[in-house]
Image 1 (cartoon, rainbow, N blue to C red):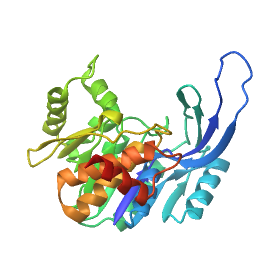
Image 2 (spheres, helix red, strand yellow):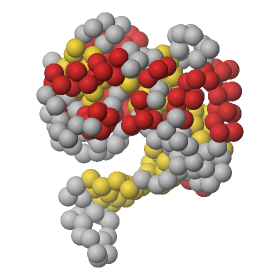
Image 3 (cartoon, rainbow, N blue to C red):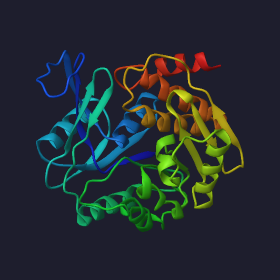
Image 4 (cartoon, one colour):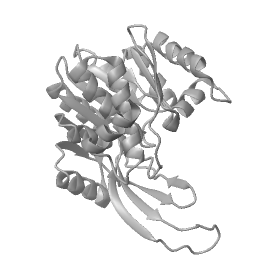
Length: 303
């Protein structure tokens, strides 16, 4: 079973504004609402790939009600804990450039997190996957994920995947996650780099993260593809397919879903990285998360 945890789900409001200008009233050319949050996106992508998944997390207020309704409408199995405040609204502005304005999020307390931990302890068993990704609300600090894994470490054989930024990610490395997936900018931030390194420099940074505890590290690089170092000492690189960027939201989440799906079925790191990169690209080329046919088509362009 594959479990995803989203501490900070969102109601995403997408607006298309042609030739947006600051300081004046702009009118939308189109608009739509969608459920968001990285773990939820991973579960939706996994469901599309016919993997059994359960999405867990925290929701609050009228926006939380919308998230529950939309997730149920999409047919996704879920377990959300109701907390105080309101789930965040993220505004995604599409114009000459992509501009995101992300909200703060609900008021998640340690007591709420303990409820999640108790639930996970009833679910997790050896061989399962636990994917924890995205940001945490401002009511929690950058040790939130590390503390979660600390309290779950007695459950042996669970494959942990972490997709987060900065110390929220690096604080988890001592718990030996199976996979982490910083993007190239997050990796540069972790190591204080002012410029993107060459491929050997990327491998070196990824290995440094391995030395801190990560078993496998994928560094996603958007249109430049993805690099990976594995616990079997492989250094891998896959080029991304060429295409028109439509929407980058969810591309990294689709990568994680694609990797886990292919790795479960093949046990091969390179084919998993290749399919993951295809999944991320296919998502970027579509308005919503890509379906399986779109992913397989993009993968065919990469051969």
